[in-house]
Length: 229
Ligand SMILES: Nc1ncnc2c1ncn2[C@@H]1O[C@H](COP(=O)(O)OP(=O)(O)OP(=O)(O)O)[C@@H](O)[C@H]1O
Image (tube, rainbow, N blue to C red; front, side):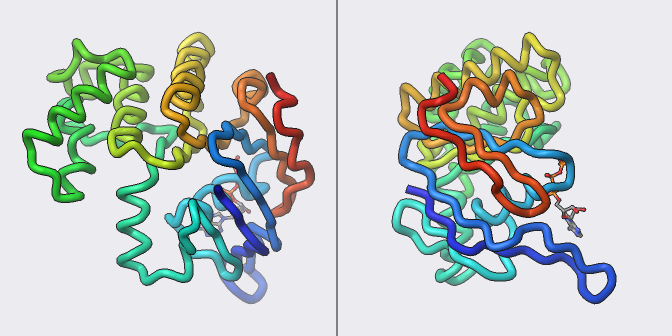
């Protein structure tokens, strides 16, 4: 489902050059929920950005559901990212002047879906994440956990094949973190969405199907499928 080959990412040049990814090979099956762990600065976020198409690799290839991410033109890659994948960030990245419904409907409107249809789908996604009664609330009126639920609704509203999450519980207390990872697991199981998340938290990683360990720009352990649960 996701196949990365010899992914390399270099930042800067000369004496200040950083090799954030060093010939990383990675294979993720459809429907897997994966955690990526490792010490600070080992390349976790860079790997997620390069796998998802947010950041270009220096070298290497990524295939998602048969689509050659870096064999495609920039425009085609962006459209694939918008239509087929979702991204959840640690700090939510919601638009503060828009309410929950408008935040979630936005990617659909970007895809050309008429507003009425986009709003209907956004309402369904918000109901799925337990916020069916907060459609008109703005992010500033809600808790961190509720904001992350909106961000998750926005990420799943297009029924993506893969959901990328970078420290999705990093800004939340431990009880809320458990609820958020429980929600991600529920989405994984009920919608069949492949989920790849970066986390520092061992108890969060333990709830995935497999944990990939990184160190110094390389994967040092691919984990065993099914070993975590
Ligand atoms: N835009 C950039 N320019 C220069 N160096 C960068 C850039 N982004 C990341 N790096 C460097 O690449 C390496 C990997 O960074 P990355 O953020 O991927 O690590 P990480 O494992 O996600 O760290 P953390 O757990 O602290 O978020 C680090 O040495 C970092 O300083």
